[in-house]
Image (cartoon, rainbow, N blue to C red; front, top):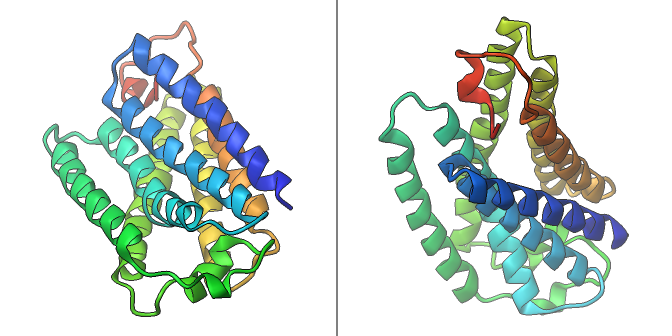
Length: 238
């Protein structure tokens, strides 16, 4: 079903455009980091859509680097910048993430791959274990990035929703942060489906993740004429 990853890519493209338009108006570090993470998600979806039609080693490597390895961590890092009360901590973590990104990129593009195991039409997420060497270092890095990204993205969105719920004056932002958390959970579900070789709903989970985060972002950043001193830290980009 190539139309599912194509649809996911289109949703992410619109999302990235919106993020960077807001970044131009308000130079916010969380916006920049989220935009980078979403761009990675979009590149991975496009590479996945292309690979449903045929094989190309660059498409596979771009999918693995941006999708399987990095995008969840970068999305979570944006949330860390938004919510951290220690101004220097997010920058220290970002430095480590940048180092990990460079190292991961080098490893992904230098690791040998076996195209003989590629099957047209099957999700790359199901085939990568056969295409990459079993002992490849880059495969061992993937859980580290994804666990960090899932905890910070989902946990941050839920924490934001909880803070806003305490004010009881911004229900749409509570729902918005809940949808962002749902999107993070959907990304985690997609990864779990891959590990158990259940690919039937993988593309659906990716589309749900993209759509939920996009809708949640729109709700969470809606301007309302209410003064919210406590909740201002969790206004993603108002």
